[in-house]
Length: 378
Image (cartoon, rainbow, N blue to C red; front, side, top):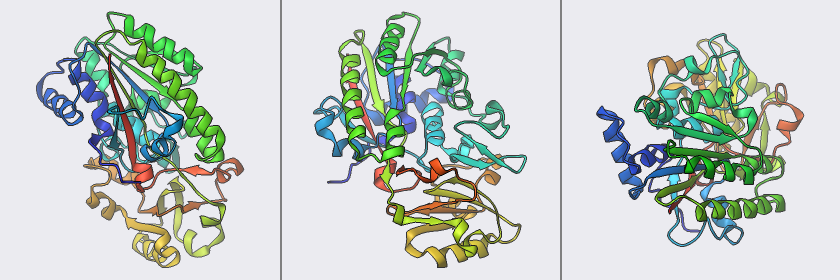
């Protein structure tokens, strides 16, 4: 398949929607909004609905285009670039703030916290306060300061979750469970004259892909249902509403034979005090003064299976955007990025269920980095 050419970045989506709705955030922020809208080529709109489908990469979607005639329809589908690491906490926050992980401190599934242990940035285990950890104002907070209203639609358990408070705080939250219920809730909110922007989250594709791989029949069936419900949402949008559908990352299936277990090789866990991140984007927190030696040992051991870089090399690469001073120590001393379909697991700390996952993400393959942008104007 011909590689997709991204028209913009995932961080442009909510900001661009604000611009399309003619909402003035004031000052320098308005120039940022205008630039995001221009990159995405969004039309004038009265209000906006942004749908994020967890785990629906551009290549995953287009490889199953027969299952998604609405999402892949002519002139609707374009491509965007997510940010590294290609994982939910990082990219939902990228969407919600317009800022990459180097500013938001949302740099993986798990990262080292201020107390020395791991902080889980999805379940938010580890004791960190979301408001203190992620201090960049969200787009919803900026809307609220301007007297405008955004509403998130998602499951009950996310209403006050750490990730919601880190990435999407500042708006109201309407809980709904099934996909059809979330579509109905989004339509109700869009009909409210006081509501300017509605955000709808759907996570089943990601969950199925993790368990069984994104090429399994269940994944294709879930995509068909998603396509039908989003087509219904598009048909019933109030006049003048902009609808954008995107994702936080794509996914690759990882064969069991293509995995390295840190626990099984002393060369890999020597001098490593803590292992964070995820199997395709690993943060290694090393014994003081040993990072260069650890990086060299990992390169020699794994060869072309991974790309191994130090903290300084990652920051200099620009992969996580500009890096704030308080964020540097959150990055691993050594960062291991999986190539191809490889993964690095750690049976000392991972559960049996996590070790059994088939679909994974986090790295820099086109399948993980490239996400869809489907645009509909009612």
